[in-house]
Image (cartoon, rainbow over all chains, first blue to last red; front, side):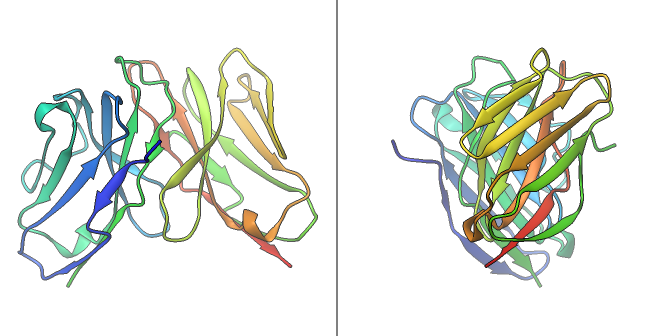
Length: 116
Length: 110
């Protein structure tokens, strides 16, 4: 079974530029999560999708971050414009879903973003 | 505020020794999960323990949960160099999603 795929693996941009990350979850997983992990800290949930609907985006900085999950499969996370403090690893995870938040999450390798 | 908090922040042991790390949380939970993260990689699920369970085993891993003290511990027995990683606890609470703690960085020295 293929795991969660993410691209790119690394990205370096200058502040005020825009950037987009892509995630392909495990086939059949209805729930998709985006996390931000700053160096030395645990992952922080940015947004959770159930199929193509948003379940939780309470910690997403909506003035600069946006995410979509068209057709309930792949997802993209965008930052526009980027700030220095956005430097972090962006992790995508998926779970079987069904609206239950207790399930095991399967993580992708992450995208490491450096904002200069 | 952070729900789960691991202790210690960092731990160094010799290969073959046991490693114990703890997680404390603040509110009632549905379950608690432990994840491992190798440097530069995504997180890997290790074990899930539900609020009505007290202990679970998986290979060399043993997890305990004490809901009265709002704490959990992860024991890795007979550690190996490959166990070197960061370990995170994640709590799932009613009406909320997982909240990860800051992690314990484990170094297993050969």
